[in-house]
Length: 626
Image 1 (cartoon, one colour):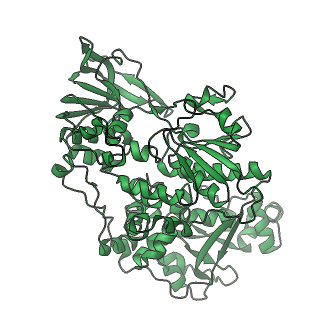
Image 2: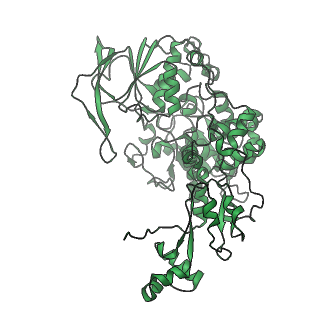
């Protein structure tokens, strides 16, 4: 006789219902992607923008370069392909974001905390670094009434958005406009001020800054421990991108090899392809017309190779980056490890490689193993290292007591506090290299902690979740399950390789609405009312994805919360009932409706089929305030 199958269940609470809106739960700043996607499908573009901008001061940039963890989590992806959430955000930001008119006007849509009665209003706060994390914190702190000064080592704010991300992905004017919106709050920006060289942290304290936030990013390329890294012609990929994007004169050899397989490595490789196309950097418009900037017509790369440890399937770069890079002429050498940079008379002549047997061990940890077979030597005039970034610790020398850990600033991961009371740190400098949107979230959390520190009072966040009245006329877009994902079109590869024009083409309106209509509306939930259920099983029978199951209580694994819920429902302890009278008595007591949320497509057939109204479709909403 086979054993009876049992089920482990979860009782819904506010967090449970929040997690069902997977795109929002997956976003580090909790952007209501579902909300703006649905608004786009319905043609409510201004509403869509307001939703997208609410938690994110860099919403327009996010629509261009965000790593889109929301798409990774999107429930539609478990059916076929995720919603094109990032591209849809770009569609509305181009109409209503900073690029559409007055950048400062977008501030009014922010849901960041404000406090007109802040007793510490006017207190001076120094932010070291004008990148995403630092400027986000400056935005939130300025809205709270603080006097914020950003110290930026470079000639403009924006961090890697200005000096690292290629212009074919992100227009520099757009970065400038997002920054300008934040500066309109009264944030002071001091450029060409490297803390540790031009000014020190002790000097900042002496000038009356009551809190200091380190948000300097990871500005140095990581080295490889192999022979030949000191040869002429070996450069860090991140330095190459900075030179290109700041208008410096850059000369490459005709054959370039990029070591690395991530998104930044592809930024480097694809930019090198364009350097070979002899274009002039847009970034010159943002810098003084020095001789080097005026003469920055690039000559070089006729061949661009990429060497990475991973196989083609394991490469960490986004698939679109790999696909477009290969289209543009990047030559991949996968499952190859760098063995030695070969030189002659002090100059690079090539890269010796060896075959990789495996990249990860049996526990999934990074632990490459190599074959004894002879490798190949790839001829090269320039070798670019793009295997990660590390800390430029100039600011540390004047505060030797500041704790570092694994090459970054050591912080409390929740509060962003360092071991020094008035110093905080956020973004890559404290958390390692992460996505753009993670830097936004990190800056926001740091701003909250600095506010708590200055007020000497913890900020309490209250969460509210509720269901509206049942949706009487629930319906999905006709044919929504048959709508395929359509990625934004791109410029032809032959054009891309010789221009800095934006590669990705924005959606036309009809396409954007159709892509938005693919949303499963995960905020609409099936609610089951046990008092009305006659256990006819009609909802189970009609469900097209088999996500419902009606089972006796004997098949439910009991845990304390569930056990108490059953006491509240039936007035008896189910465990004791089973022990005293047997499982048959429990079986006769009642049944439970189980639902696999991963399979639900929000079609509403179950609610339509129910003869007693025991199943309803209800709209869950939640918010938080502090």
